[in-house]
Length: 350
Figure: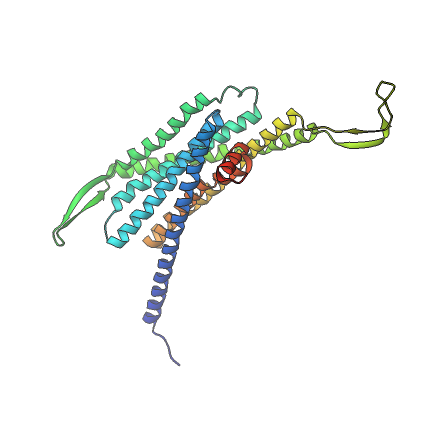
């Protein structure tokens, strides 16, 4: 009986594993390109549509700002892929550029998360306390809040990135130079504090959004009940005759025809607004939790399985973030009547 040596068997396993990792790497790159381009195109469409419709209220300002932040998420994703491809083809060390690009990418995703939390909180309070919050969320106030939401994550991440030092290192053997990223003691301390801060902010945002989801579901149910009660029935009752005054009047079966009232239309519009916000928040919460699980696995992989698995898991986490940035277009098309009509007119679908 032929027996394969253990060393040969291990070589075959390692070769198969290497081939598998290469295939997975190519698939991840292709997926990152597709999702990144989709996020850019769809959010560019969102920004153009909301600007064309006019930033007339607080909700529109928030949706426009969310689209702008998600647009940068897609752009940074594409930039990351381009740098990775150039690095592999030209055999160049571009880690320094990847380092800062990842910080910008994280900044845009954190900004989108903060804006989504603000949207959820705004809509939930308007549903739960409509009379008290009627003048609390205005276009002017949102125009002041949103820039602060943009600036704070950017300042924190750039301060964190600046704790590392970039130096130019010369290689006498190859007569070349390269940029080297060195990490000092202050970087380690800043990293620990930043991780704790980001974790606390993420947990707080998720808790707020989950509470808002509950409030919005209850509000949506109440809105549907109001629509059902305010919608008059159209019926025929042959047993009852209405005799109008006048000698030429004829008695006969009466037909009661009615159209939806203004109250019903208003409730229907409010119901769609709640559904729009509800789906945006639910999808964001689900994908954020999935992204957090993947990042946790990447940390475990870094400590146990090696560099390749960690990179692939990190890239998959980036894909989840970029996918989260691309789904709003479809929600707007489904529940935002003005948005859908504008897009359909421009595309000639009407």
